[in-house]
Length: 339
Image (cartoon, rainbow, N blue to C red; front, side, top):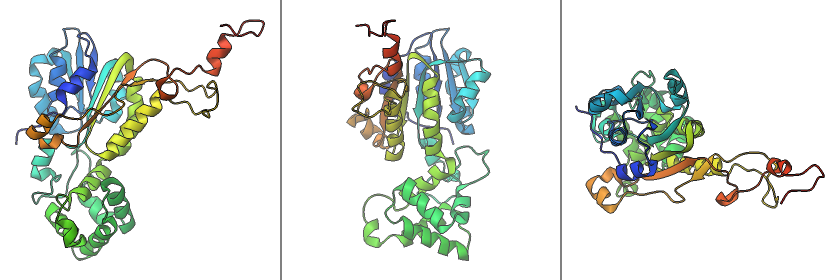
């Protein structure tokens, strides 16, 4: 099956990146190369695009799609959490922009044998990086009932998480659960008929939860965002597209903390903690897809784009707050503060 993924919020993301023709940009979730292609089209000969993805199929598809720009493109099979290390190998210390298009791709969902979909019967896989040995089947069959409950509740925000976890444990005592169809059967049995009448497929939230746990999606995101901001040159931007509330919450909170890291009490007139802002949140509210885009691509419905720009010194609410150290530096030899 050919790798196909329609990039969501493509024009909005490219616009917010404010691409410099001679800049260096990183697509940390390369996928089919949709965002990377538009970046490359705006680069001159000295510009550079570095694409990172852990999915071998995505690497092959993007390599073909970006072939006309191969002189300015470097493609790496890795996870974006290793971005700094991968760039160091290339001799790149800083970049002008980073793009992350999170979640599962259309190709991964539509390729049944990858085990992401709950619409067809296939092996319980869900690995974004097939070099990984642990699969979704290992989680379903080896996690304790309490661990399954935690995963389904926290990552799937599933109201029937406890009952689903209990039913999984009961079912696997009779036979190991090996396919998506077998897991779906168990999930349906754990959810009352009236609750299954609306709200989409009954297995949707549980499948999302297992996928997130298996691929450590939220941990990787939370642990990586600050490091990617640190890689940006002054004025450089990071654009992150999320598809569910858990991801969006992490991005929103991390960007806010990077803009206003001060931990001093609000009543303090100056900052004494010494923590410096790393930039500005450009999107106070996330950018959402247009109604037209949602009608063309239903998977865009839940997408949100948030943008952060490196540079500047800001205090609470984005207003510059002079630090204790800055104020001390402006004090003259007689102990009088300069105006």
